[in-house]
Length: 286
Image (cartoon, rainbow, N blue to C red; front, side):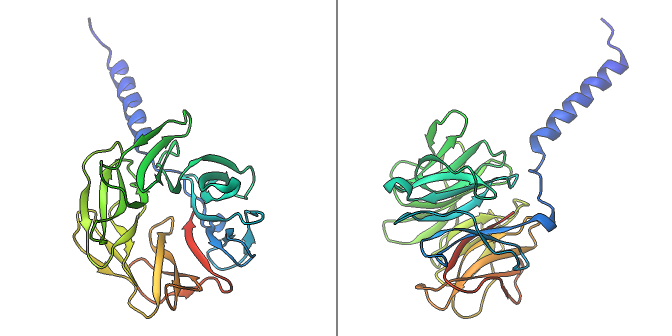
C-alpha cells in the first residue's frame, strides 16, 4: 500500500506537536503580575502573605484563627494555586488555595509540599518520609527508601524526573540527594556543612541549598559548588525567580530571627531588602 507524502507529513506534525506538549514548560507569569508569597507572623499568628518583587502591595492571603498557623507556601506551576502547610483542625496538613487566598481546602496529612511540573501531583513529607500524591485520585505513594526516616524539603525537578531533598543521617549530618520521582535509589549531591533545603532553578541545571549559615548553588551532579551569600547573619530558604536570574531568601542575625526577606542575583552580589517588620520566612516566587 502506498502512503502519500501529505499523510506522512501530517503524522510527523502530530507527533512533533505531541512531543512539544509533553516538554512544554509551565506558563510564566508576566513580570508585572509576579508576586512573592511567604509566611509571616506580622499579623499575630503565622499566615501566608504576598508582596510584589519591588516591595509594593504587601497583603495578607490567609487568616488562620485561634492557635492555627499557615506556613511554607508554594506556587503551583501556573501560579494560580498555593500549596501550604497548616495546623487548621488541630493536625498539621497540606492545604491549597487560590493565588488570592480564596477557596482554601485540605489536601492530606503531611507538610513541606512541592508541586510536580504539570501540577497534577505533589511531593511532601509525612512522618519523616517522602511521598507523592496524585491530586485527581488522592492516591499516595512512598518514594523514600526503607529506613530513611528523616527526609525533608522535597523539590521536584522541572523535567519531572527527580525530587531533590535533604536527609539527616544517624550521625545527625544533613546531605542533599536526588531521588527518582517514582521512587528508587537516592544519589548524593553534597554532604558538607549541613546542606539542606535544595531548590531547583527553572532551567533544571543547578540547585540552590543552604548550609548552617549561608546559601550556595551546585550542579545536580555535585560539581561547581558555589557560595552565593558570604555576609554576616544567617541566610535560609532560597527560591529562584521565574526567570532564574535572582533569588529570594530570608535572613536573620541569628537562627532565632527575626527574619526579613531579601533579593540577590542568582550568581551572588549585593542583596536588596524586601520586607521589614515581624518575621518573614519560606518565600516562593511566581
